[in-house]
Amino acid sequence: MSTALPPSGSGALAKREARLAWALLAPTMISISLVVVLPLLAIIWISFKPFTLTDLRPPAPIVRESLRGEGDNLRIEYRIRNSSQEIAITSVTLSDTLPPGLTLKDDLPDHCHLTNRNLFCDFGDMDGGARERLRLPVLATDDVDALEDLVKETKPAMTGAGPSMLTNFEFSMENFTRLFDGGEFWSVLWITLFYTVFGTIGALVMGLFAALLLNKSFRGQGFIRGLYLFPYVAPVIAVAFTWVTLFDPFSGSANALLLQMGLAQTPINFFGDRPLALIMVTVFEIWRYFPLSFLFILARMQSIDTSMYEAADMDGASPFQKFWLLSIPQLLGILSVLFLLRFIWTFNKFDDIFLLTGGNAGTRTLTVNVYEQAFAISNIGAGAAVAVVILLCLLLFSFVFFRFISREEGL
Image (cartoon, rainbow, N blue to C red; front, side, top):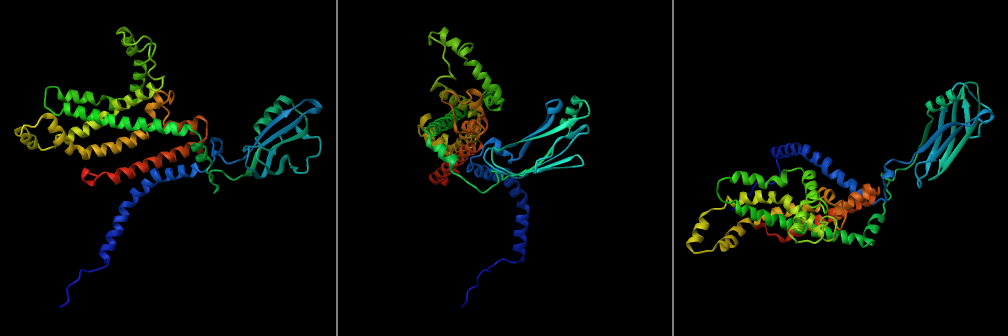
């Protein structure tokens, strides 16, 4: 006796539903590609090129025209140079119109010719860093000063093309070699890990403590909750400069209080001395971002069934036992998610450290290093290489996190 088998394959209706689903997802996928994937691929592409800020524009010929000399020595002078010091430019030509009142005295060079006051010169190829100077002796029939203004008004046109370092298919490991050869990278990586790990754990612990305090009904509870949110919702530039002013070694209130209480003999440079500056920016990170953890943890606490705590009270459990054996297992899921998010966000954090210390006094993290390489010294390729290292570190962390964190924890 044969048994009935379920239908296999996909029918016309299933295929139509699949096409409809892809059509609905297409705008989202295209938006994600434009906003996330394409910039990410561009950064990876640039990281394999010894690319500086001056290489953003492809090499091109640059010309300066001027009317020089006087009397019989009057001449039009063209100074032409290759904008790149390394890349050659091919088919370089110059086109210009001689203003009325000027006539050529001598014959033109072989690579130039004049047609109805229209000058054309073919310089051929120009090597990287090459310069050319073209002098044309002329006679003036009008006022020289007026002619000089006319010469400046008639801009010569240049043609010539060279390969762009950004778009060619030549790749190099030079940026990564320089990055890992020096001992500075490992120091910056250690500072980043210290700042990230302690900043993340501190924000979670402080958020948990705040949630425990406010997980009860009392008068003024709403006001206290709003006060707790102030560090997170306040503009970062405002709170950062407030901290810098508060802990200023000369006019800060913190130093004045420590000196008056006899706890310090000399003013303390909180954001200028090692390793105190790193500790201070980490404390700022904890203070500024604990409200996010506080909100999520408090919401999870308020959803826990109170019958468990009532049963624990009947069994004579202490407050610590109820917290450790009942509350913590219920909070592990949200704590894991918060640790993942806060670790990634803190690892990528730039503005807080830059506003507090500018990356000085041992607070230079990888993100600050990206800014300094790409913009301070205009080495965009090196900055992109550091950004790729940040991406790889976060991918490694995410892999380890999801590999060893149980699905039972809400992930």
